[in-house]
Length: 48
Image (cartoon, rainbow, N blue to C red; front, side, top):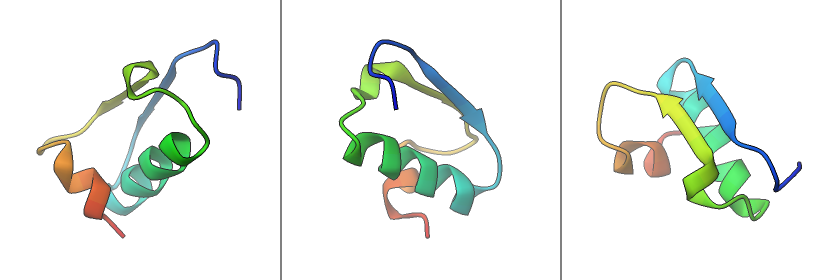
């Protein structure tokens, strides 16, 4: 993935958690990851 762009996503909690964690694992800065989620950001770190 490119590190010179922003990433936007929304969807079910398991999908969002997986995408969020994967982007961070690939080294994408959290400041470039944007999403629509109705709950605390921390919930995405533990979503399966």
